[in-house]
Amino acid sequence: MNDFKIKFTVDGRTISEKEILEMELSRYHHVFHIFDEKEIPISLNNKTLSLKELLDLPLESAKVALAQTRENIGKEKTLKLFKPEIDRGDQMWKDIAASSRTGVNFQESYVEVETENISLIQFLMFNQSLMKTNNLYLPSTIHPEHYYFDADKTGRQVIIETFGMYQDPSYLDLKPGSKEDYPVKPGKDVDIVMAGKTFLRSNGQDTKMMGMHQLTNTPTGMKVKLGVFLPENAPKEIGEGHKWHLMVEFNNGLHIAAKQHPNFIQKKVLETAINRMKKNNQ
Image (cartoon, rainbow, N blue to C red; front, top):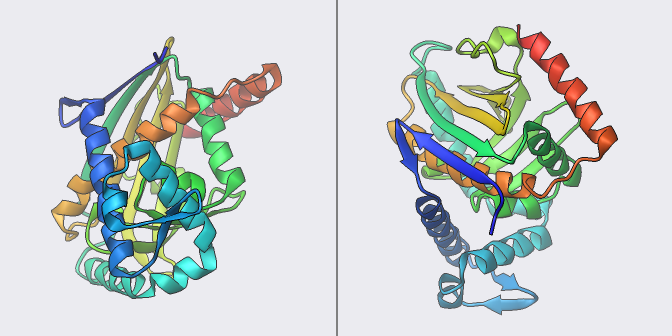
């Protein structure tokens, strides 16, 4: 039994973990169908499985099968295999950006998270491990529609994911945003703001979409306000779908974070970093 609690709230409604896990499994099935259509075999522990066998897997085994397969395929081959999807995704964002004004009439989507016995320090340790491992395995276990992940020390990330679980995967360059880029003012007690601007990796075009997550220490855990800010003419389904994407992603991330056990030095270093980031937000 877990000694921690995670509560997700969307549009005033508490979302149960059962609902989140059901959505997660349905998205694994969605990806399994895509791989099958593209005739890309998926293996679990070196045994290739049929589509029927994949759809019969429990969630944990489905996660391992897809993660092992993605890691075996590798980053370079993934880009080649999914070029048609990437090209369609690029065109979608070009059309959205061309018809939307920059920073005007954002479509705002939020997911609120509260934890007990999972601290902000533990979450930062998980986030650091994600950047450090920098592989395809771990991101794939966090959300099945994480096709590609590459990070550097500046906080920049290059990803391929089905953004908002809508249509085709998008090949995106995520760059950290400054305080001047924040689409909304952070809450007064917020410790860390993680903001990012989003560009097409293929040609550097601004998609006019932003992300902004606000993280706050509490006496028993932390509070997080996850936010995505879509251009005014983006399909509304992207924002609604991304709420579920964020819940699947952060539920898995927080379960990993709960297993992090900082030593004295790690705790002091991260406490100092949090205090410094909080001052920068003010």
